[in-house]
Image (cartoon, rainbow, N blue to C red):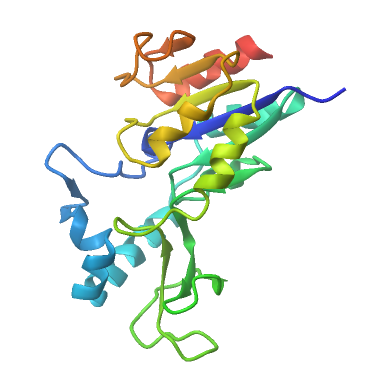
Length: 228
């Protein structure tokens, strides 16, 4: 008998309580930078040095934080359910907490890739600088999906949602596409739990949504206790 399948869709609010900056504030800035300067393919072409410096800082910050109670609570669900996490986050806090199946829609901060061959991906822990080349002699870049680029793992995420028995959405504004559209693939029978202190969807759009208007560490703990 197969375990029920739960898909978790997580966003910046999932990691905020670990001390990782949410993607952008009300002014469209991310760590005091214009988002399009540091998180777009055009920004990369304009100023590689700025982009590399920005992600080097993010990588250093990631080493200084730990998974929070919400990350750890999701791991407990694997005792009873088949859990797949589809995250917009580029940190590795889900993995470090112990989750066994994580899909990173927007790339991973601790990896880099070749600028010419997107399938040539390397683990990377230190600073990435101009002049760091892949084995084929091309400049390496952060393994991040930027604005203006395709999202290679979106189909894997959509397939997971379409085959699930339950969806848990945590800490996402539901504003960044195509990730925000994944919930539309949910089977009609699948309950949706949405955990966010400022919920961006309502029963007007998803009649079967259960809204838990709390921060991740509180809301996830409550829901996991209920589901177990």
